[in-house]
Length: 110
Image 1: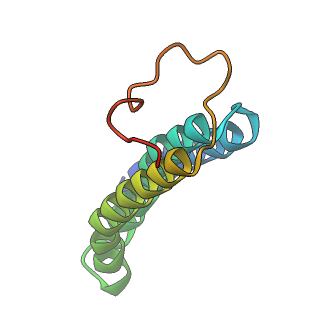
Image 2: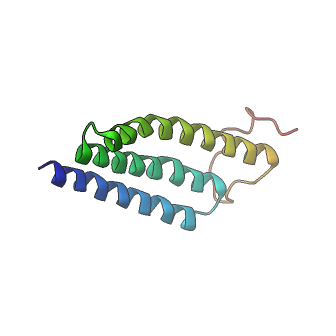
């Protein structure tokens, strides 16, 4: 039973990671690509790690997988924010079909 549930979580995680990687290849600009990377790949990796935890339980492998979940959450969000801010300040333009620029007044380009 635990093996089946863990395989379901791992399969969902692999699917999210695949679609996140596909978004990195297919989306038009750095801001959309970072959206794909931080949302779907983070959720996919969480799912894989949770599936590993369910599979191995409170052993060394399972506890390490459980510890990695919050680390990935904080690292991915902080890294994505830093990359977006740096890209925007550096002057990388939004996609030409973007509708709104929320950061135009917030992050002044110097």
